[in-house]
Length: 426
Image (cartoon, rainbow, N blue to C red; front, side, top):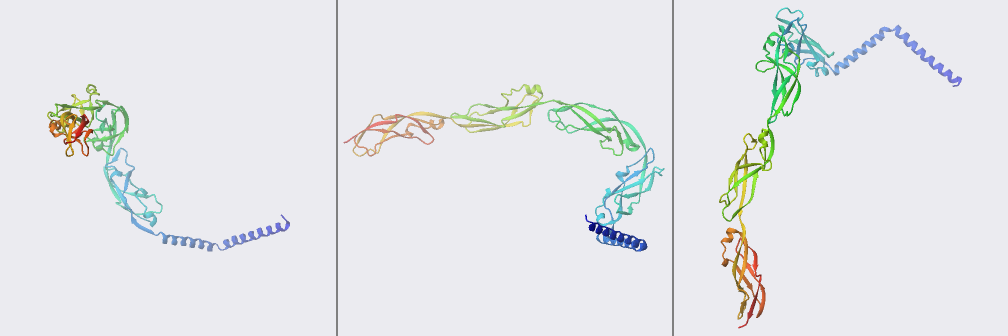
């Protein structure tokens, strides 16, 4: 850096020092003006803030529980102050704060340190946790408190079973970590306690369990008694779940008896549902053949010529049970399909005028298939067997044989299928 630059830096620093010195001397000689400026600035800030977020007075709608403090030794409030005593407050606060206030923003207390009687009226004090909220009014300003002597006594520990295990299971022996508990509290409440209970949930339990549950003080009707302390607060419970039944899925075997009418047969047998779940003691379930399943009650199809549908019960061994005690058995009956052979005379059709005809055989064997009742009603004359010689001239002709069966029957076979026709002139 050159000497000229050093000189300019010294001049600049000197000027700044003189300006700061003059400001300090001016503030010392005119301190009242400085204070006035600060006051004016604060006033202006308050004015602007109050205009944008004005202070309002309103009652907080939430109920504030009252806590009794400094309760005399050996005494307790009955009922508990925090459970039954509440107050509301009217506050003054900025609008933005007022709309957000709840009961959690306040603490209400009643000091019982000077109470000597069993019943007293004491003032309520409320403290705001929000520094911008000023409490204007407390309602009610006083509460009446009743005091009782605190006492203790031992009561039995019991279990209260909630829910049930699945079907086929039942709760077995249970072991409690403690057989008695000490209940402490106002003497009128302690006197109502007959036992403390641990609620044990058995829903869907299939095996041994271990649970730690809170102990609830309860009266003779099983209702909870609030306002007392239980020692110990919880208990460990171990229990067994015993399996009384087992279940197995087996096939349903329909018991169909008798025979359909002549000419009819059983096409199919259906069961709905085809399987059932059978439950019962192990020795009962083991007596059921899982291959054969369980049988239905008898379903008769004697002389039936149409489908037979019957709702029937299941034949279960004693001690066994199913959720659906009835099933539906459907036996499909249809005409029996068979075949019969007929000797049918052979006829010539469409023979030309003046021509004589001679057949190599005059009878054919026709086998028809269909339902046996229909076939039994057909006579040979109901079947047409023909040879068509339309347009043929004199001579020997090997021609096919045409068969027209009656309705409901079909041609299964024909012997022979061809024949020789000899045509001759006059």
